[in-house]
Image 1: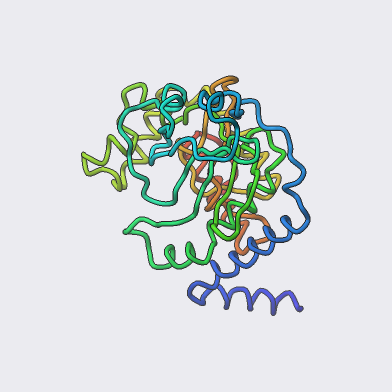
Image 2 (image 1 turned 120 degrees about the horizontal axis):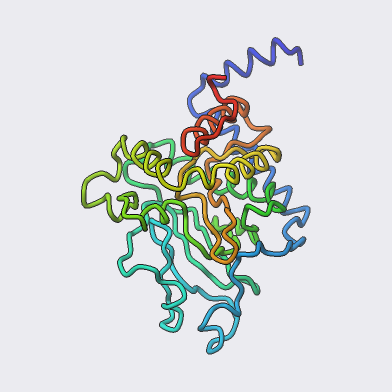
Length: 297
């Protein structure tokens, strides 16, 4: 096709409501299904060093390593054990904050300890488009395609299974705490469970306060490692757009950093990737003090 005609067609399609998201959905769905048909999940790479193994779970000694639910993850990413024997292992706080979207559980799955992320449910204040494309599977397929691209990175937990019928992903469970949780341990009010009673859960100024608190604390200590992760993800054509401290995990055993959320990542080969890559760089620059080329470059 003539390049000028293609450019005009692309610009015209972008003006059609929902066309951009629909095109992305088609692209990531095709990529995911092709990877499954190629049996990419049979490769079984070794877990990252901070991944939990069945032998780490106390109740396995009593119940064995068969498939079952071990714990539920709440809105702030804290785990709450199902079996009483596992409470000391999983539970790091007593009060559970209900999740606003999706359902996350820690499960035993085919010999691995995984996070099972089921893409059901959206917050009531989410847009109609968000509800629609969630139902169609955009965020599910987007995260699946991202994790498949990043499966060999040491800074991303391995994806173990993709269940199309239930829209569930199974990802190695890494034990640790997020940068946001670490900030909260210093006394900063940054967790949803602390902000909800104050009416600040959706406060537009929330991010600024969190960014400033992080920069004044341990931000410098993590900057270089975050940049290394970002560059490695970008090299594989993945640019997360949900950039926040709660999506970077510090491994408990090694102190290594892991990026853990890709449902809204921009993927190379999908519409407006370069534009979204610049947006991604603007976000990581803002949150982590990096100097990557962004939209203003």
